[in-house]
Length: 112
Image (cartoon, rainbow, N blue to C red; front, side, top):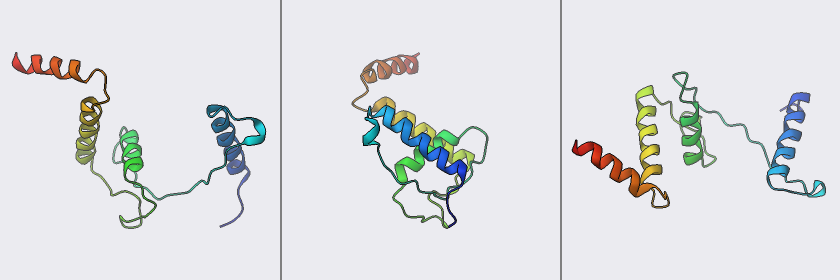
């Protein structure tokens, strides 16, 4: 791999700067991290990039096991099911302080 381009160097400096601000680090204690490029599938529509990112975070183990990619190629229908599962998991999570209110609200709606 060739050396970093000027753009890559600037982006790396910006990432370190933002991470330093988020972690409230002194300038001489800059955080360090390694950027890895991973082959991921292209979303099949114009609105599921966030769902793919969340699924990537959930599944990534450093191994490209899906025909050289970090994730399988999902259809729009599969991404809809994944989105629904994420929402259910978040709403029904025991740490969700509004969990019981949401369950009660939808229980009342289902009884109508």
